[in-house]
Length: 206
Ligand SMILES: CC(C)(COP(=O)(O)OP(=O)(O)OC[C@H]1O[C@@H](n2cnc3c(N)ncnc32)[C@H](O)[C@@H]1OP(=O)(O)O)[C@@H](O)C(=O)NCCC(=O)NCCS
Image (cartoon, rainbow, N blue to C red; front, side, top):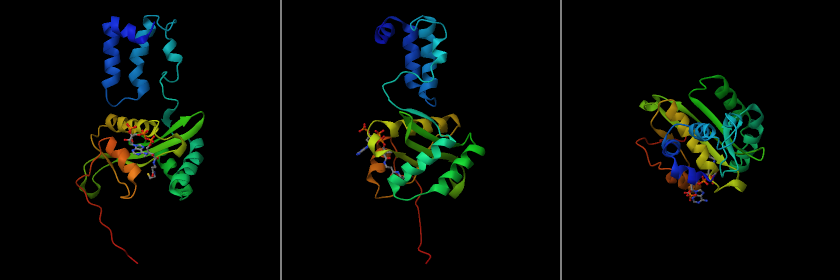
């Protein structure tokens, strides 16, 4: 039976879908679990608890967002180098290790995977009271493979980390970008980020 027809006739499912669409701070998978539970209990998918065996919900997206693993670090290094032209091998290995072992509830390193390949990543963490700033979620890096852009991979990565920040209790997102990076500027502006209350200052020390 088409999902839209079920939703039309069944008020409970409409509520489930509405909650899935509007509930902030959850991953897509977490949002969809009540929907699958409901469909399952009504035998829409045929067998009881069949939703539990699904690793990910069926969506139109041909990629998944998941926490970075050790095996991804080399791909992240290569992708970052391809985009920025700078190899940050040591830095990214060190970053992954710190994020994996310390404060994992406040530090987030996610990758987008498509066809078994890393096609994007996002890194960020909750920082508090530096420069007098109240706790907020910082995105330090976000990048998508040039061959996979404009397919919502970047948006999915940003949504994921924002959800994690919300779950951890912070209500503000911050980042810093180069003035010349018009692409990142467009991307962040499209997600509602605007100039904040702090100014970056610097001085040449040579
Ligand atoms: C910015 C970036 C992450 C966007 O990834 P993406 O997967 O292409 O983004 P999305 O498809 O989710 O696009 C979301 C929005 O961003 C904006 N956007 C994305 N690509 C754009 C482009 N080429 N021109 C203008 N706006 C663009 C649009 O508003 C878009 O919304 P729309 O699809 O409704 O028009 C990606 O282009 C990238 O990795 N750029 C390089 C980033 C970088 O320099 N990283 C190193 C420093 S951290």
